[in-house]
Structures are given as structure tokens and as C-alpha cells.
Image 1: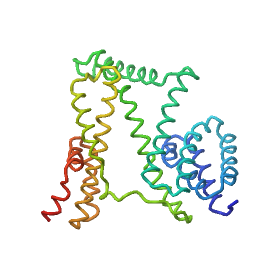
Image 2: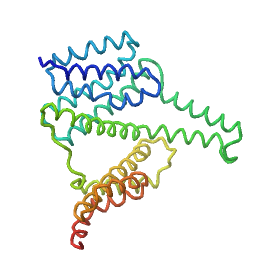
Image 3: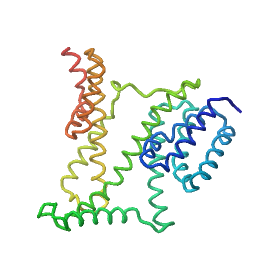
Image 4: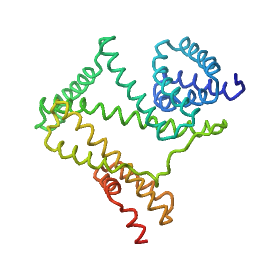
Length: 301
């Protein structure tokens, strides 16, 4: 068993983050860093030592606040253990992101199912009711356009509900990337060799994704956004998801140019902001994946 001051400090950090979940405003930052202490502890301690550090934290948190707080803690503990296990095996960063992202995504989907079947509480119905009541209240105050009707509200609710898979996917992987970025640097300081993610300038998607994207985009043009058919809902989530993926590829393209043209490192970072915010700019990533435009650029240097 590895003992010392550092594991105790990380246990204290885990306790503080759990307690902050009960504090308004501070609970959001606490959620953002929730996985980090568990990843560090699992990566640097034996399984028995990890349990001996975590169990007292959870007991104290349940006594000070509420045992229900541990439900949220458990949600983040599972992917943290998975990430820590992969760190111990020196798994490549890309696989860490994929595996942990899938775990978090599966947990989000499972929560919807548990609330629906076990607790008899439909989060989707609750969301629909909240949106509907909000629009009804705004319409009663005559602050919406006169053309807006209850049918428009129902169509809007349908789109929001159908886009939940995309929302979950984005949340799962963004959260995984942030947790990995922080945790990896902390674990390395403890002596573990955790592989780094590929440099942005080396990112390269498989060309087959371009074909998938074009097929999905063409099919989506003929689908109604309010349709609840499986194919329509799948395309509604797949097209913007692939668009985000190609936007990331576009960012890699600009990092590649910056590297070979000796630009300041801040330039591609600043370019990344509009690329992520303006969907049509993802076309740059599509072109970079489909054609050897990088070579053409280097030749013209």
C-alpha cells in the first residue's frame, strides 16, 4: 500500500468536490473536475489502497450532506476508474478518449432508462413540459412574433428531444477530453508514463468518413426535421456530429500550416474559435480529409 501526503491531499480534494455539489454556483465547476482526484488515486495506488482512500470520503460526504449525493459521485467514479486503469496499462490517448467517452455516454443513456423504468419519471416529458410552459408564458405576454403558434412550439420541442443523442455524445467526449487533459499531467508527475495525444498538426481522419458525411447530408436534405422516424432522427444527429468532427480536422489543418509556416502558436488557436462556432467552416476539414491539400500548400511555400 502506497501512503503519504499526496494521496491524502487527493482524497481531500475528492471530498471537497463532493461537498461542493450541494453548493449553488460552485457545483458546476465541481462537476467539471470531479473525475480528476479519482483518476490520480486509481492510477497511483493499489486497488486496496484506492478503496481505503475513497470509502471514508464517501462516508463523510453522505453524513455531512446526504447519501443521495453519492449517486452523482458514483456516476463520475466509474469512468474515472476506467481512465485510471487505462493509464496504468499505458494505453494510447486516443483509445483512452474513445473508451471513457463511451462509458460516460452509456451512463447518460442508462440514467434516462433508470429514471423512466425504476423511478417512473420521464426526464424527456419533464423537459417537454418545461419548454412548453415557458413558451406559453412568453406568448401570453405577447413578446413572441404573432406568427408563432403552439404548433411551432411542439415542432421545436420535437427537434430538441430528437437532438438529445447528439448532445449526450458531445458532452461525454468534451468532458472526457477535459478530464484527460488535466489528469494526465498530474499522473505523469507521479512517475507514470501516460502516452500523449497526437499533436494537432498530425490529426488525420479516414477518408471513408467523407463518403459517410456526403451520404448522410444528402439523405438529410429530404427528411423533415420534425419527423420521428428512426432514420430521420439518426440523420438529425449524425450530420451535425460529423460536422463537428470535420471542424476538429480543420483545426488540425491550420495547426499543420502554422507549423510549416512558422506562425505564432496563438494564430491557429485563435482560428479554432470561428471554426468551431461557424458550421460551414467544417468544409475545410472535409477537403483536408478528402484531398492532399496539405502537400499542395507545402509545395507553394
